[in-house]
Image (cartoon, rainbow, N blue to C red; front, side, top):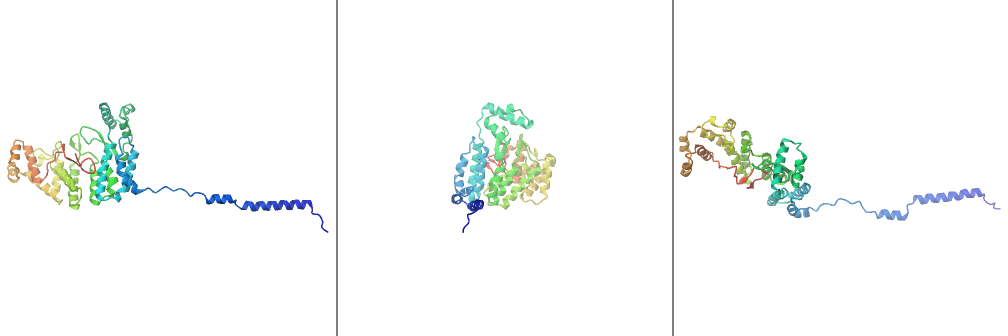
Length: 359
């Protein structure tokens, strides 16, 4: 005989069956979840920039930089220039360098009224003397001046009193040294980096030479050695000009800072210049030392000896015979093989950037 099942046992058994089913279901993922996981999109990655396209568009980007653009925009273009320079040949790099000058000229162009020009010059001069200048004076400036003054130092923008009659913005000479020079051939890299350092400060201030004789001699020596080391550089003519310019400043001075009036004796020579020239004459520094020796010889000559030893044209002599100082300068230029330079009306500007440009 079969006995009927105990109701309590039956209830317990039923509950256990249900619970075991739930456990099995819980341990399995629904099919829809599995499908959803398999269809999940992969994580997005930053797209790799198309360098070819960037370089193709670079010149157009540079042309698009105008007085309405920001320093951030020009810094982005400079970053693109850095990426593209290694892909270019030397002539293309030089072309891009010239284009960069035009880009900054466009960026720094400001159309001021005469009142705004005066306000700008007053503000900059006052700020140099009193850094805590009133905000009300700043608000009188052209809006573009306000922007550039706030962002001075960014994107290689700085103020300079390079010219005698005005304070202006300029692209720092370090721009070419930092953005272009690392990607150029050695002769061009050395030229740009050293000229940028030399032109960090104005050559003249208040019509006076802004360098000590030791520094002038150092620069003359550098450009002499540069010409020997890199005789085939694309900057050959500019390096020759710089060598002659600093040699002239060393042995003659400038119109506003002559080292002598008549070069008649050591006592007639600026004492600091004489010490440097005398030291050079006792060294073996190539042409510069030879010029220093001849300079000392010239100073020791009488006017009659100069006339006998130094040949200048009759036309030149007759023109200068009543101007002993100008005659001495002409004779000294001839004797030392220097080319006279009028720094006030120089045709080649090699003293404000990291490359030379025609004025």
